[in-house]
Image 1 (cartoon, rainbow, N blue to C red):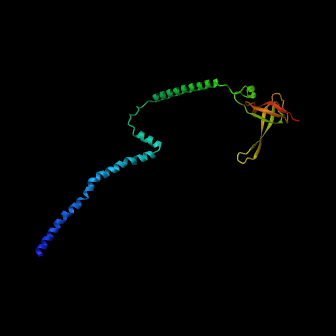
Image 2 (tube, rainbow, N blue to C red; image 1 turned 180 degrees about the vertical axis):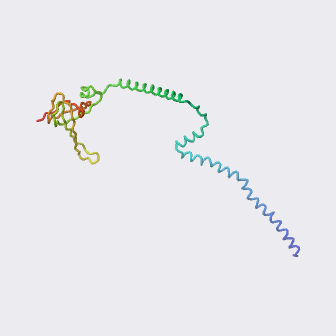
Image 3 (cartoon, one colour; image 1 turned 120 degrees about the vertical axis):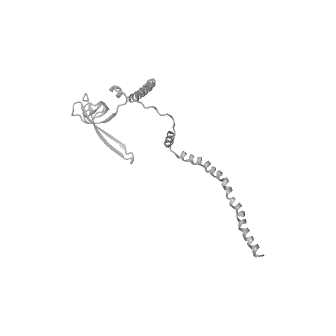
Length: 208
């Protein structure tokens, strides 16, 4: 092969190389046509990602978002007199509802038989159960007043040991019936003096 032919081949080779490389360069352009599909995939996945945080939101946050997207019209500004009138109407409506409810409850209770109360409560002319205590008289020096010691023994809540305790009460004795050593029964009453809140009901056992 002559030197002229070699030069011709060398001159043609660089020109043909770009033509052969052109299809390879065009090959990456095909994915470019598919790029919209790739963009659509994240777009389709986007709602799923948006739904996950919404499911994780607390009810308070969801209400706040709903309020932020509210497009309703704002209420017109009200004067102080209008606000006071609205409050008064609300209170009247609630009061009427309460009266109706209480009347219904009274009628329901009136239809039911009343539970029997102890004789002590009936004698005192009071409604409901009155507390009663039983103890031993330790002093009867004062007029129409006795001092009664109340002893109690109960198991400890945690350790179950019997814990004994005592208290002293002042009770009203109208007839001066009780004396030292007597076992008596007391019932609570209205304040009769600075220290007397109890009244003698009966003497259960006389001192020997």
